[in-house]
Image (cartoon, rainbow over all chains, first blue to last red):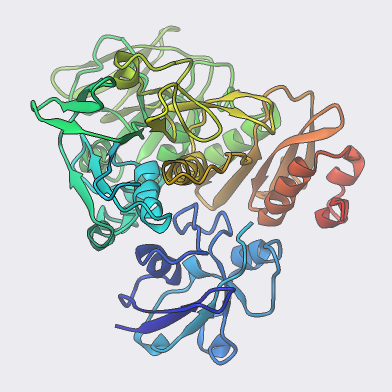
Length: 106
Length: 409
């Protein structure tokens, strides 16, 4: 089970073991991690599961698709490492992944 | 709050799945029980007419949260039981199986049920409504390539179902009683767009036609219309709207007005009974009127407000409604409510392409946006609605001008 660390905007970190094949968003929702709202349940419609991928991991994750890129352009405080966590599938190769959560999803 | 306080949630819905863990996060230390008349943990309903029906997701994949989350939060879930009556004076809930439960806080997340139509033949095998997982499972068993489906109702559910059934290789006809599809919810331009796309995808849409009977021996064979036309059918799906489930609240004597009336803190007319989601009617400060919404966003946001209220942390509900609909390769995102609009401004090629945004205006201000494959227009549109400023329609329509530039800083 890949281990992922979610770090809140205030620095508080939670390490979670996720099912391979699940999404980063679902992992957060399943573990009641604050800061991921995920209104649309993972259909890339709402941009309320925005997160920042830790600099060490950005290159190891498939790049965002067109729809995701467009949504990311409009989230609160977008950065180069912004992603929608519903679009990132957790695999064994992402064991140790670190993601940072924004202060707000709105 | 005493540790032995009891909170009961009725209905294992989107709102319930949000409410239970949020109660824990907000510090509720009492018991939490969820009572459901269904046989599944809370699941995402939107995929029922989309990915679930088309076979892209199974029942487990549409669960909102896995069982482990409810266990971890100490949420007791009773499935397959209907809540019968509420005794407000003694703060007791009676279940249909005869059991009685005491509560300190009760939350009604009972959702909505399908509106039924009363025409001959609706009880034949192969005729379905689509609202819950059981309906979707039954429909799936009746699907098959080259089989014929007739969908009664050209609203979002009907059209999403048409899209899913086309993916399965079925022949699909949609019958709409009003002069056009999506009459209640979109502008004529947007309805015409969807009519064109469905035609391009091989769906036959017939508007202004009333289904008056369904025929067959035991299994459905055809649908008859008021104008004498008849459509062969191996499968009929009826999608003509929903009605809020208010019976329990009515029995309890709570205020009902097109839904269970709640205040901005999700409280009903009894302070110990709250309600959230499709079953409620609430006052929306943005649109300055009472709304009953059929939406995931409303269910989640109102449930979050209800959890805060129960934990003594009053946070008023004030959210811009938003919705989505996936059909074929079209991702429609809707921000706001268009009712009362006087003008529609279209951005992009609505007649020839598969990407545009329609802005619903009233007195120069933006009320709502329908954005198809244009997430940026949706996201910026949301903010423009909330800002409430006068907007130049010419600028809205100018596809070369980034919409963001219209935002007040």
